[in-house]
Figure: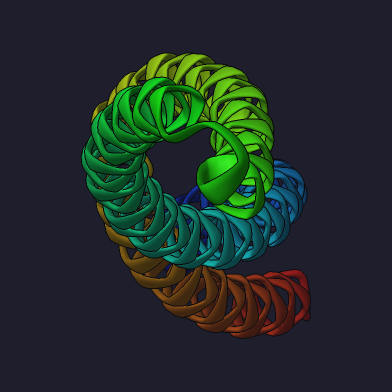
Length: 242
């Protein structure tokens, strides 16, 4: 009888200990599950933010690509303008040469007309008609020289204008080139950020998955602990029977 009582006492002690341990374990598991849910929420929020950053980076890359395309078009347009200005400059030089030739011809014509007028004066009455023609030729030569002077002024103005345009184009080309270099550096930076964010997304997704697995395991531990506590309580009740 005394041995049976000792056994009951031992069983009660063990079952009470199991109940206490189970309750403590269950409380710890519940705390861990709660903390894990909090961590899981933080991970999910971080993943969403990382995805948002990734989308913004992609948007920035798209805008930068559009900018680069526009700059390439600007570079092509600038090159075409340079070619056009060079052709215009070449045409101005050719016009200037032709004007010089015409100017020389006008001088020679004026000289010939002057000589003809002198000869007509020597001829007296017989040279009057020729003198009138010579006078008209001289007037035409003078008018031609005056018109040539106007053309030369226009050609000089055109050459000055093309020179200024070439200077502006050179500056624009330099600006475009610097923009290209800056954009390329920015593109590389965007790519590094994109790669880093993508890797971070992958790590966060994996962490989120592991946290869910951990919560699942702890929930199973909690259920097992509850079973142990229930069994211990049943054992306790049995041990208290007379």
